[in-house]
Length: 210
Image (tube, rainbow, N blue to C red; front, side, top):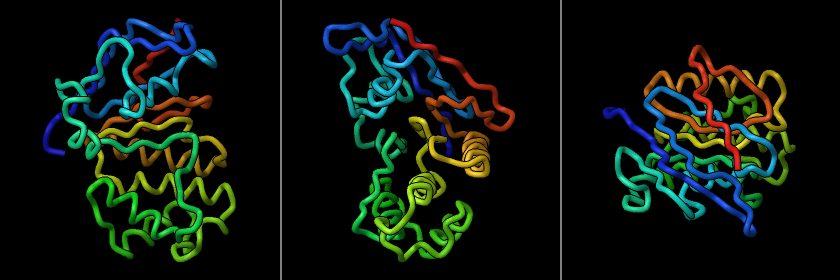
């Protein structure tokens, strides 16, 4: 990570079905920091994360990456972005290794078998690489989905409820992984019903209101 990335929200707004979810959101996130997006249910936290990822249009305002609107640099921005939503986004008919290789390829990387095995071991699903995803438990699927982060070279991680359906050990493991990412100059934007400390880096708070 040679440059210092910056994510900026300027007068960001969102509405659904004629109802204003949030408006006039201004925020700047710097390298090595993480943003905790808070707010009542239905206020638009997931909508904001989808906008950050370019999966939903910005109805008002602008999102910029390194000073340029994300819509003007789609390909470059995708290379710098890793998104994990509520769903695990795994292909049930593919093996664990095939899923990880496919997703890594979308981000421009090609992990080898040793890297994949090391990551799966770290996430407590050792020996599952050649197993079809459909044969995994829900907890194992979540750990495989989260293991994508360890293989990602993206500088910006966008995580929607990443700690859901995880035991205490899994929560701590993921928090440590995010902390290591921040220590390398990475950034994270996340929502969570669990307030989990991320290393020694205090959260930058963003509370959404209509």
